[in-house]
Image (cartoon, rainbow, N blue to C red; front, top):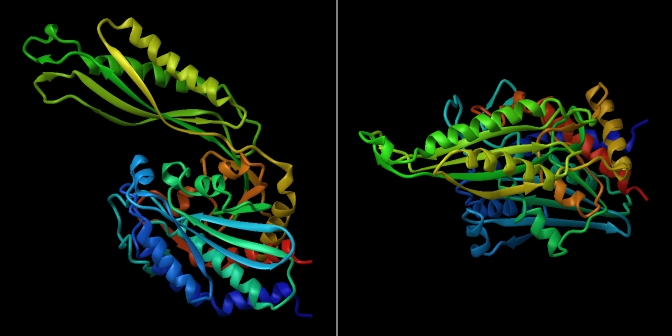
Length: 409
């Protein structure tokens, strides 16, 4: 006997060529962040959605707010599909992504398909789930059955800079208040928790001098090296702290950017470094920040003549496990196993995402979408990022089936 699940699968298979072309069009509009000029992508996405009969509300973020965050333009999208009284399921994916960088063998904006893989920046993270979620909703509506509740497609554009102008802004203004949230992810696990992140900018001030008479200056770089050594020693100690959430190991710290000095023959008078401290769900963010600041200022106080300024760039809280998401998680696991032919476990992830913003408002959530078993396999944030088209096809079926379960009267 043919079931509604079978009919969903058949619709996805029959319209998969359109889904792939939809994703190619999304990849071909750059959303490199920085510079973060992402309104054109939102406009293109809205135009493509309109061809399916989906009216996308365009929520423009004011230029002043965008530029205060170091970006150029942001327009967030919400598509509301109302079927009747009942729960609202929101599906959120972000369109912004880091610049391509070097080493590509395929056009990062070409959407080229080779050996069953679609290549392009954001093809995997997370423009693929613009397609997954859109076509899952279209498949659901193709059944023509009675449904109870609503679906919201929420496409946002500042995840790389913390999400406050994307989901954060929509939530703050009451533009979305879902009962469940599904956010962009990969196909072989359902993520139910993630790390937090603290980012600090540390500026070490010394005194410039001619390299021929270095004793007349104070070397800010030497001060920065001492601070770096202390931070790296602290990072080694973090291995002794372990998380109880599967998929998350221990806290860690990375210094990702260093700038300083004026010329080879000048004692550096100022050095700036930026650090990223990942926090496991069990940690207290305020305590973490205080400890990192203490390490830096303690070292600086031991070095004569230098001064440090510490500026917080980002504080993203961890997203902690929540039993309230059980109906969503269990449906994803059940249909994931049926479609992929293997168990789909739950786990945490060391990444941080916009989901924390929904979790902070008590909205049960899960992370699931189209993609491989690991971030590394997809080349996300590296050259030749890609999505396996078969993962896209099957994830669309899983999400469509899950929506049917949650919205069936």
